Every structure is written in structure tokens, then in C-alpha cells.
Length: 284
Image (cartoon, rainbow, N blue to C red; front, side, top):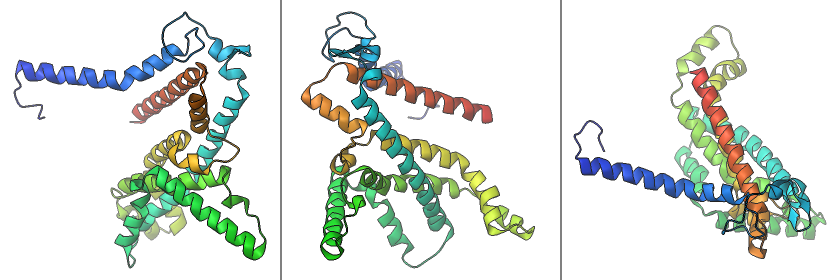
């Protein structure tokens, strides 16, 4: 809708109503989840039975809070470690991929580009099953032919990292590539004419220009890895990530500690978003 065009009163009212309903639909479940984190009930649902913080600090068998729930704490730590390595690998490979597709010419470039973005259109379930079958086949082959038991080919921490990296790196490549399209190559040429090496040009000029895209794509990669469920479900071993652990708890029946975890995650991600917005405005 064009803002400068005149609008009837009914159209303006309908637009405002649509925006209000949209944000209610978007934030109402999050608000309810946050409220129920303080509900004095054994079940993570209504009705409201009073205010309590025991789902955060409780240390009783029937009121075990998140700060004393070692299983959930361990799963959060596993998710953080997985997200850290996935982000690190994705930033390295994704940034190199952006340079490859934006600044180099080679035979079959278009075909390789479509191959690179294909993990984004493949359902996470299919991707997880495919990686599991491929790694299992390799593991059986190594064991039958050379008697080697390669831990990387078994479901576990590093297989989860590789599974998430396989599609998150593509997202980083696209984000960095979009920024790199706006880069003026004459800046590199001028620096090299003044005696700078290729490495110095990339480090001091190109990467400085790409810094916002790298930081932004890194934050998105970390969050995508932290909350990933579909792919991780088929690759996880004895160390369950937080989404897998929450799924198991919901399936088997759990307490409002799930709401407490959700509350902490919502508050944490919101604070990070606000800090990012604050420093972005301060830099501008």
C-alpha cells in the first residue's frame, strides 16, 4: 500500500486492526508462556493458582527449579557448545564462499551456486535422515574394511555440529554475499597500488566493510543452531540439545520448568536484540 495515496477511514481502521491482530497473534503465546513460568501449579498450563518463583529456584523433588535441574542445565550447555562451533565453522566457510561466488569466475559457477543454496530448500527432517544414513554407511565401511571405529560417523555431538553446519553455512554465505555486492573493488586496487599485500587488503579493508554482515549472520547462525530441532533429532547421541530435551519432557509430561526455561530464553534473546539495536544506533 502506497502511503502517499489517500485512504478512506474504513481502510485506515482496517489496517490498524490488522496490525494489532498480527502482533497479538505473534506475541500472545510468548506472553502466556512467560506468565505461566510463575504459576504455582504442577502443570505447565492454566488455570492460574498463584505466584511463585520455585520453577526457577526450587530445590525439592516435586518443585525442582531450572537452576537446580542438572539435566536441563546440561542440555543448555550442549546447545551453547554446538551453536558456538556451528557459528565458527559457518562464518569461516560462509565468508570464503561469499568471496568465491562474488569475486571469482570459474566453470560451472551457476551450478555450484544452486548446489550451495539447496540445503535451504530441503526439509530439515530429510536433511537429518540423509546425513545419518550417509554417516552410518561411512562408519560401517571404515569398520568392515579397515577395522576403524570413527566416532564422527556415530550420532553424537560432532555429527550434530556437522548436520547444522551443512545448511547454516549457506545462510551465512547469502548474507555476506549481499553485503559484498555493494563493495567497491577500486578500494582494494588502490590499496594494492600503495604496496599492500593481498592479505592486508582483505584484512584491513574488505573484512572491515563486511564486519556488520559477519556479525549479523553470526548472531543468526548461533540462534538457528541453538533452537534447531528437525535436523538435530536424527543426529543427536547421548548428549541431548535443549530443544530435544524439551521435546522429550513435553512428550512424557513435565512441570512448568519448561515455561521457566522459555522465559529465560525470551528475556535473553530480547536483551541481545536490544543491545545490538543500541550499539547499531550509537555507531550510526
